[in-house]
Length: 447
Image: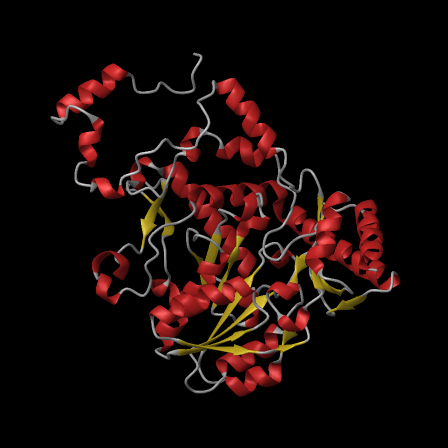
């Protein structure tokens, strides 16, 4: 065929108009006053044939700066990681590509098993016994953790560290505003949570303490001490975590976290200009029936054969909406599958090696910056750290583009005290040569 699809013919249009008793398309807009109708010609180019259109669109797309065209040192929540080729191969199969959460599990066993495997992997990474079928993204999962904690403890006050991702903080505030939950922000001590201030802010009215691990600056927070602070007044401990880092770091569940959330973009999901990604949500067994979203369970049929079902479906979101604690009734099936495939392809050993490479290469880059005379902030990091510059970060990043690099995040966009500071991300994909040249170029442009 010469067309990707067949457009509606004039004969088709005529038959449709006759079926609804209309002689002309313009009659469909008769209720709109003529004074507000657009009567001129739209300023758009004439139609092109498919080949010419694709050439033009590809020419426009080639102007984009991506991690394919440039070496990326940009993280801040979205990372350039290795994606096994098998991921695209499997998720492109029609039975997965078009699938959604199945409402008839007896005919959707493949999709349900894929979701069940995702839940199992997240449970193992977080150190918690229950995980749901995925959520929209990391920030919304984190916010759901905040509201669920407040609802569970019946305390309308949460304390959240300023070291969490600034956008996650805003999403949490937005969610909490709708449920009249007070959000108190614990300040920073350098690039991590000020534990003394956090301890002072947590009281009998605090329903939860929320932190990020590793935090927005790449620093590893002291979860053992934060857990003590969170639980001393019977509040819940909510941690937002990078799941790749959890391949190597002690899981938050082992530190006593009640809820762990995050984004699985680091496993098998491209940056994609910011989304869509895939949130995860894990919790203790005690909190299982309060979890937002869907859960897939494993069972056996009457002949003893293994099977999968949607479980815990009698939730307020469906049958008692006026008492709902969440309005999330969906999941990211396709991206959750992509993450599951990536984790399975890497395997436990591969994920650990990948995480180790992030730590080692970030450490090498930190030492290279120090040797070049830069001030580097933070002590124990995963794959991100802060570098102090002499000039505006956005201005330097523009110069880096011309040298083939995507520079780090301008922290001055989110923190006044970190103006002229760059958040640099070094993943396993960055080579020694790329790191060395990046440090050299940054030194030249920094003045």
